[in-house]
Length: 148
Image 1 (tube, rainbow, N blue to C red):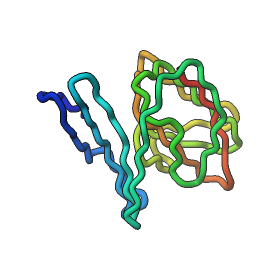
Image 2 (spheres, rainbow, N blue to C red):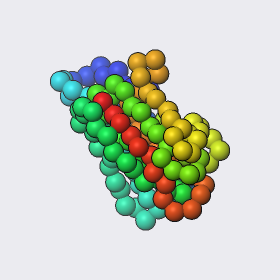
Image 3 (cartoon, rainbow, N blue to C red):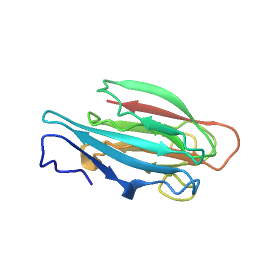
């Protein structure tokens, strides 16, 4: 849910996109706005009270990277309101699951098969939010990601 500001400035907290893993860690989306702009941040509060903020990424142009995915939920792409296209390719020997949002889970969400399986975000399925991934194998596995 994106807020519809009706004032010059404000803050809106969306708790509908929290992650249940682990149960004592809370993740929420925080929106803030002024007369000229809207900002969206992911805020995570760990069981020990540590607060971390995942900032939205800036505008990108043809950014390609190899990213390691763990056996726990791993952030693979932050929020990017300027995102147009993403190509995510599984460059490992293990199935990787991604979630468009928080809290990737094994055997749930979007399955990317090993050895070149891919998922694409484009104008047909446009998505600019956080993307997380997980795998059920051992060690770190690699996704290649191109975003522009």
